[in-house]
Image (cartoon, rainbow over all chains, first blue to last red; front, side):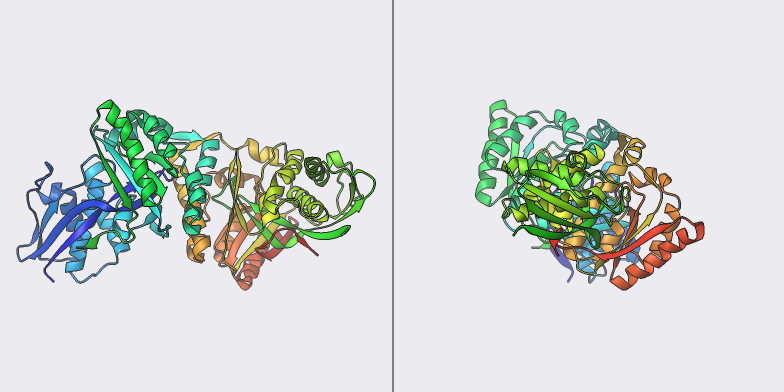
Length: 306
Length: 306
């Protein structure tokens, strides 16, 4: 096989109580990437129509991630990468992670699968390092593994794939405002009250239990963030109203996707998730802020061939 | 039925990464309690041979918990309670919780089970309020429900029973030194670094996943406490050496039981747990500090009739 096209999923990181550790992959929101083996060594990236992104592989997250993988294999050939960039940069649903994960997954496939998807995570993290300065894994892990993932530790890297119930459906509203990840990091405090921490890890433990036992009500009760959301919500105009509408329409829970500005909700069943989407949309309809709306099942396998 | 004898299990709270939320019940360590219906209203407690504990029901945790249950049912009769107190007070393995849980479980049974074990938790918590000033549930919940429990929230009370693998065996060493719960609370800081919190909830999420998936190695990797143990360990002479010996002998993890001074380890299989017990004992043997040693499977049902 010399050429492959893959779907590179968008991802929701943090998921209320799981700041910096939890993430999930979406099934119907993502980029398309076509990767072809070339005799010419190195990586070349075709101009990206949808967004103004660098094509220099050293400055492109897909390029950097792919080069890291090739280097580890001491591979002397090359690849041509074409990206249909459907996930907007800065949306908070893992745009850079999708590109990084897609590139390493496709290259690994074309080279005969020397690595497992789990083993590809560190290479994709190099793309994240380029994008945000920090090689975080909470988006690339679900993008590569699918489902819910927990990044338990970075040193050593320890990623746990968590089974989730089939009827869980995500709704994402992306208001077209800019929130820089670096800004949303800056406003966080470096210390937190122990009492808030106890609530937070109680909720994360409960959420993991709810996912394994398919207890939707428990999942809903645990989708609460006592530490980050109260600080970051201020950066997202309309957040409180959107959340209130989502919960009123039957969502199990609602919070900030990654560092925002996208807002996610999780619901039981597609019909509820669509109702939730309509309710969330109303808020931005009334303010005149442009937005995208996505409704998606959880993607059980991450990057996949088309 | 007018009379019942029950086994009231000792419990391990906190379990490294689950400060104030996680607990588990032991199977072979506990009190024996015999409760008998009486025509005389109220609760009478027989003198307790093993320990100097109050028999005034208003000053005894079993009495207070039982009275809270009777009051909620508006029950006008009475009970005579006889306690064989095998769990030492102040050991850090839920001595007060065993008495409180046993009393409400037995009285509930004698009254025809008006409440489920889960519904009994708030009454048992009244015993804990008497014992420590705080109506905490991290010992009474596993004592009443068995297995691992997660106290996700207090307002409203939300307790989750977590399935655990059958081969998990606890080793507990109780050095005969006094650590007051109030002292071990006082030395805790009221705030903690966000970076430590991220590690802590990553570990708690991973531990819950490991319990559901029977992944002993994952359980072991998650039995780490970045927040409380580094502060409290100083109150327990020999803690670092005991922990090091336990891990060296094959324990999955080792930490402080409750607020100490007991030290617990979890292992896969009884044989390893016994080896771990020998290794932990060596430390106190060499210092001359007297200690008790317990090796016990996890108790799957909590308080049980004899």
